[in-house]
Image (cartoon, rainbow, N blue to C red; front, side):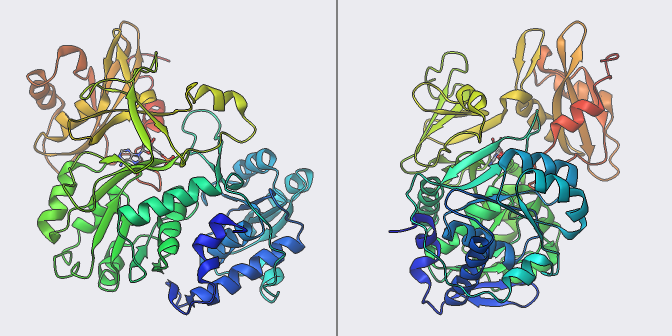
Length: 505
Ligand code: AMP
């Protein structure tokens, strides 16, 4: 084996005529055609000076070119560094200085702003536009696909993914060939992927969900993808007739449920719907089953670990839980202070060990040490508990835990109570600085349509359901919760927006 990840994704299928990718602008590739395309990208990267271990940074809209860049980078032993497409040129400058890539492929509109900083960081700057044009295309379009094969080992880096960084600066998670490959194989088996599968791909590909969970798993199985630029519910319903698997984030399912065409007929070709990256409400899970007959399979992972747990393919998919640990991965709930394993039913810090766990943060030993235990377990920053049957429930991020009057309040418990009140769509519970309590439990609530739910109605209902210290000190209404592209509620934005609710902070 010369290149563990590349060989398993496409190298071993590089002579196969089986379909691989169909994009929304009508491009179609078989595996053999795409291997040639990835070879061209690898050849061009090598001509630009990329050698074993060098970083290739990409900030470009989702396209077949970006997938070819990913595979081409791995093919020449490089390290792929995709960036969120919404980052500004100023933010990209930070990543350039941090990762010091040999090549950066950026959006044409950022060229002027990045030119100097790219030069200073020693990176060659090329461009790739939404319609596939730019200097990268000019350089790569007609090259041959001959590559000096770079021998890689399982412990070599394949990618650096920057975490979404809602607190402090974003950190680069270093992922090895083994991290990515072991997880792709695990998911392929756990979710029973076969070459006949067709994944409807609607996720961004700068994030581990769309890039690794979706693409690596599909390719490992030799299956194919319908590759949409983005998620559009009406379009997705049409395409479900040609697909067998959809990987979504919870907001996708909420949007699908609003489509009158969603039914067991329009989903009859499908064998699997998965959800992750943010909590799927049990209500959404149940509504989806009622309309389509399909039970969404919820799973849990992080940029640093890929996937850790999954509900079973065969067996009970328990709404509100993220299922059991995947084979060969140890997931434990531990005492956050001592690291001691906690018994079933007790809430604590979710910690993970296994071949999926990343190699540390790029050039940041301090952060790496802070987030690993001495026995090698990675502290995910999530809180949760296991039930008797080994199903894990996530309660939230430890940094979102509210400590009010010295007592711990888990936002999810309060949110679930609020969400169950008639006329309420959803809520986010946050801690806001407060003179007496340190932090005051504060609920930000979205009403369903024009319902006349009042602050007092919510306070009265909760007074019988939650201990006094868990009851919100203030309830504020908002039209919509701020979410990122992966459907995660951005509580940092809410904390900032409402920081002065109890006085100036
Ligand atoms: P990211 O690194 O952007 O993939 O974000 C990882 C975080 O997303 C985890 O630490 C969890 O807080 C959250 N997350 C991922 N999957 C789930 C899920 N199924 N339910 C609840 N939270 C999730």
